[in-house]
Length: 406
Ligand SMILES: *Cc1c(COP(=O)(O)O)cnc(C)c1O
Image (cartoon, rainbow, N blue to C red; front, side, top):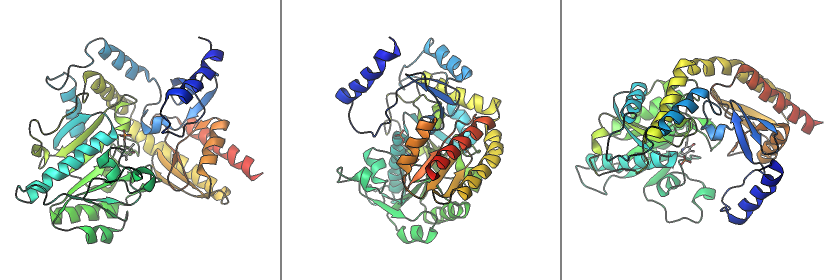
């Protein structure tokens, strides 16, 4: 079919048949290579959305494509009633990164977080001497985002996400990020876990400080409370370390991962440290699609490429000059930019107003970026974005800012 026919057709089909739960851009993407995508008119965009931090290696990395293509011809899915040759190896590689413990595979960030919230219940029962329903509370952070399932939503204290869906899961309380006292005040005998994003993504790119994370670690150890970190967005190399909490030199009791792990293929995972991994017994948790050979092949390809191309070092090194450029941009346009924050390739530009308008203007200029809470424009380049591509994004931002200031 020629693009002249496809374009109006696609929009009409969405209008007529697709659930209207997204505020979607009027753009149909048909092809991607590296840091670029093309629409059905043949227009090229620099893609610093990366599928919301999912396409960690850009689009169609040749080694990733070859691995997925090969595995699709061997075995795609056989269920968790049997072993497959790739799931054990992927678990080993994640344990190598996270520390002694065990890994469970699922399909999304929300599903990973559900697993963590169930872990909190099992730990609470252990803490209460085996009695169920006595110790079940979870303390999360204001502005958090943990997903759209009932558990994830209950851990996400935002009206736009919870509204219309109450009653929620009971037992959630919310402290202020980076205010250790507010978390300390909320802990009691019924607290099973503290659960936060190491760097809040959807909430506006707000990082937990190293001191705060170390404080939470001590607080949790003191009260026999699990420290569970949601690294669904900030994990798998996005900040220049494999896990963002490595910057603070702390070890959580459990970790949720998803977005970047499959490089575009849906896969989620939870890692549970060895003192709690045995809480899950045969039959106590599961998922049909988790850890299929195909999903694991995709994730193993991501880990291979991260290592072979030394991408953690690349993110760390390339982000120094890039952050300096972005900070200079903020200084040059104080009327529009309040500040720039984040780490590595996870950046939030805090606008003074109208983040949606900026995202639209940037798209029209050729740069795709997502928004975040509180008037923030996020930049999430692929981890292998080149210095030239990072500079191109700065040039496009500059052009759009100049046009608005003229
Ligand atoms: C995206 C995200 C989730 C939810 O992941 P889904 O795959 O959309 O279910 C959870 N936590 C964080 C921090 C996220 O960024």
